Image (cartoon, rainbow, N blue to C red; front, side, top):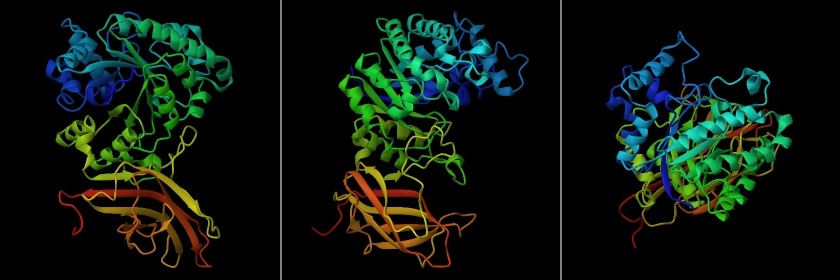
Length: 479
């Protein structure tokens, strides 16, 4: 049954067990829960392992740190001794978080990576040439862990992480995919049977954004839905952490809703980082999060899934999380849409709009699609800015730029340097849209190169597109 949720994920490591000094006092042990308590978050997801050991004292699996002593880095030493400091007081590190979440009115999901686990036979590891989940022993072990999490802990849901956890390139070896696809489908059914009927009645999965990407990894998500094997899905690609309200998940929303399963849209934490050619990492501001969140909700997502926000979570982050839980709070507030860019790691990149390259002699029109959740014609919208960054643009270039078939020739356009360090590399074209504005829903930005100096043969590259929608309490206009 579909359920609206606002979820926050903590991976147990970066902003928790790696960061605090042992012994772990309860006030610190509760931080992952308390820092989102009182916001719009109603579900807390917790990464119970990263593929090399569980972050609790498991009966069936190896606890993180058991096999790597003496420790070669402080983060691992802290993690082991933080967990031990709780265990020595008779406290289970996982139960401490589950109980705190319930005390604060939140559901608790245990999120489990599916590719590897602590003390795994090296011959089974994909990185070492093994088959991973193609081995029955691997599937059996993961099944035991899932059953433990569902039956021996007061979890409210189990999330199976298939979204290339840890940035791994594959779930299965390519040569195993065809034979293993139906076996993995049956395996997901087996996992669901162990979870359902327990307190952890909900079972779902992180999957990849497109159907083709999932099929290439042996994940027949459509079959899972048709057979009613999952209650929720979270589309994403681990390692690509660029905020994207245009993620191509319409197929998934349609298939999931036909099966009465929920889809939770991921709000990745950055609008820029080095992987997409940016000068530096930039966290999403509240206006960026509002834009992506309302787009994902408009496109049918049943809720939102956030993680890795700037830490420690302070007033700005908590305010943003409060808005995510209530669409009305985001409706008439400033939005800043930033189109996603392709990662340098293109092997597992889902389709994104940017960058777009235009050869010097190419006169074809390039189309850049994007979604807008705002009604830009609405009376309280005070300004709409369209920002386009183009590498190697010069003032002698002749461009035709249109929005949904309407030329922007008559709109006010100013130019700004694109890079702080190397201002000569790119130019921002900033349109203050008055007559031609984007529409609520799907839009098409059209760019054609009509002419370029004969003695300049480098291509143009459209690397960034942004739309800022600004609101004011007073309506625009005289009437």
